[in-house]
Image 1: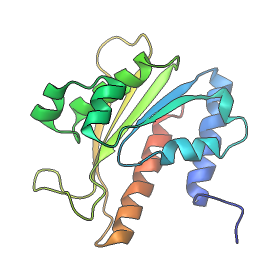
Image 2: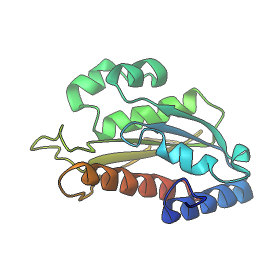
Image 3: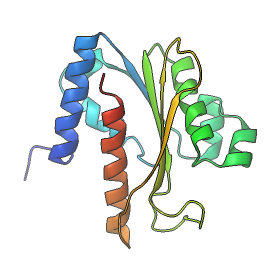
Length: 170
């Protein structure tokens, strides 16, 4: 048995996120949906992470996104939970409800079900917002190929976790 909770690539990247954000004097907040707290889990595996991670929100349901992060019902009804508009609002809500300098939000379709023609399984959206930033947060839509079945779900969530950690690097 290994002494690692998460895959090596995730823990190694999380260690960089912690070290580089300590060096930059920056704190972070997370708003996770399809990753279900994996990004926060990866960061908290690293000694010293309490200097960096202010808080994380796992807002899996639309109601949680609205209640905990202030995402408007209009955004969810108009664009859906898996949209740049939604993750922008999630990232802004994470900043508003924290003392963090930066927030990253993630929402997606991990599968194996739940995909549509417009948003197939593997569609994941990300946003990064900075405190006192002018304009809208940065947003990105990605398509991860996870293959069929439950292993595909794990692969999509793994790739989304890596992408979110990369967005947290200074």
